[in-house]
Image (cartoon, rainbow, N blue to C red; front, side):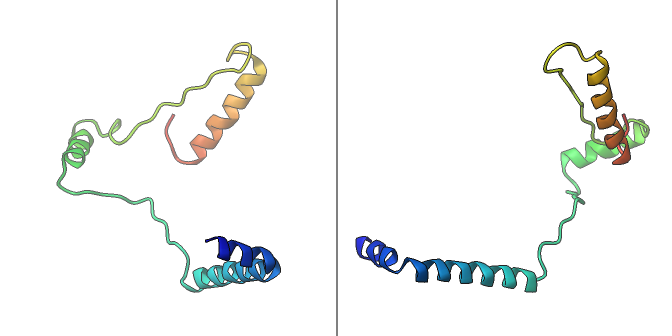
Amino acid sequence: MGTLGRWCFRHRWIVILLWVLAFAGFTVASSAAGGAKFSNSFSLPGNDSTRALDLMKEAFPQRSGESASIVWKAKSGSVRDAAVEQKIAGMLEKVTKLGLRI
């Protein structure tokens, strides 16, 4: 290992060039492979969670599905301060644009 380290130190410009070429090669190969295709669709038919969600949709269609809570805290003062309420309103507007119910 020491021999390799000494060689790399003595030939540092060649080593740097090789790393840059390797990085460029991986970048080109990644682009040629088509990149990652992401999907936010997920289902596991037949498991307990899916059955529970289906029951919720049947019994309470307006309240079925996943839910989350948004919680905020002011760094100083109160959440009722005008500046804080303005920031919260902006954040809630972004949440609404995502198609989420508030």
